[in-house]
Image (cartoon, rainbow, N blue to C red; front, top):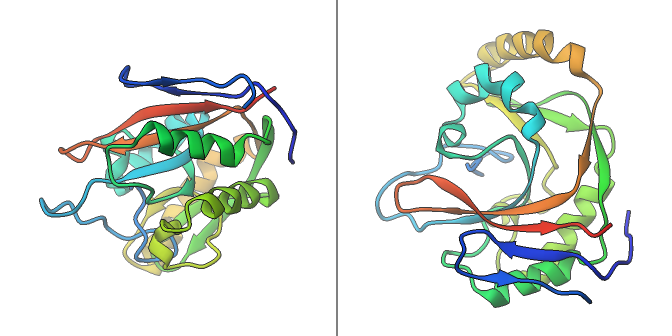
Length: 217
């Protein structure tokens, strides 16, 4: 879904920079989109470009908060469009280029219909139709070819929202049953995507929103 537009804007929410234009783990990636991020002191800080789905925060908390470390580090339920992105700090030029990459996209709906799994470790919510998400991912990657999704580990990553992590198929089976009971009354879940969020990791491993791009109406 591409909607030509001229009034999207980007806000750098840290208060350092504000960019506007009128014509204009994270889950980790050692497995299809997830393994433990090394929190050692020598690991470079990261940024990510996401679609946040706060509607799912409460319902997924019993599993997400317990099994996904970044859930306690400020990262809400989300779909990753590009992770990892630039090493902080980001510049005005980075944000301007990102805005240009997605300037033709207006708000659009996404529908979560069921659970999927990357065995034996990852349980995720899958989309009924991921066409627009994939198009956004390609548009962003075209502008930033030096930072491929998941470090280039997966040439065609599957758009997904991670729900929980496990250490075995048996544990994943149990998690899937529990989560499905909780999610069933909410599915299919339709979410209207209004904005893209850029997050940055600080020196303590916590994540913060630093830029929000409102998709033009």
